[in-house]
Image 1: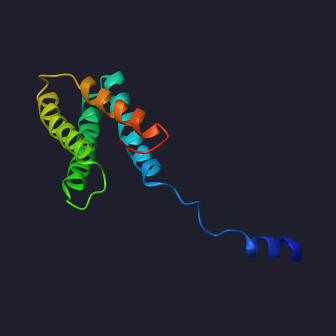
Image 2 (image 1 turned 90 degrees about the vertical axis):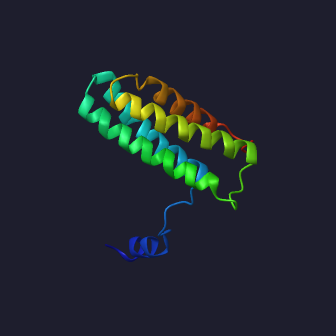
Length: 123
């Protein structure tokens, strides 16, 4: 390695670019949604159970976050997210008992992804 290459490497940025909270949330929800969709499409019940568990953990985390009085989101949005977390928990139990389809869970996640993808402030 020559001295120019060594200097370029030494002064190159060492950290990844800073990502917004919104982009991190989008990536996490997209990953979970992808697994859920794959399991539904393949009609693979064991993988569906795994995806449902991961999705439920995601929504429980979101519910905990929006229930925090210090959360900066508008109260109305926090309430809607909390309601979706409750719906997700209820629907997941029914899907696990094979009484309902997992498609509504997929639709909820997809709607959230669309909202996160939009530019501008969260309302």
